[in-house]
Length: 67
Image (cartoon, rainbow, N blue to C red):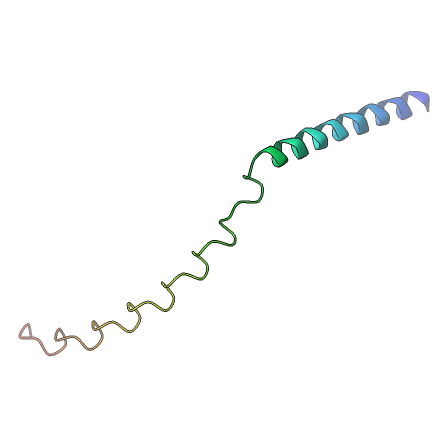
């Protein structure tokens, strides 16, 4: 019983140490909360770009001389 409690305390201590080191690492770096999630990529002009309404669908290819 005593050995189980001491090993549990040791495991908890090491996990707290990892949590503390991870927290200090994230506070020193912007990698954990980058600007990519709020970047312009999600609201980019690609979804409303001219590619979907491009002239390719109404282009001269369908009426071209290839046929």
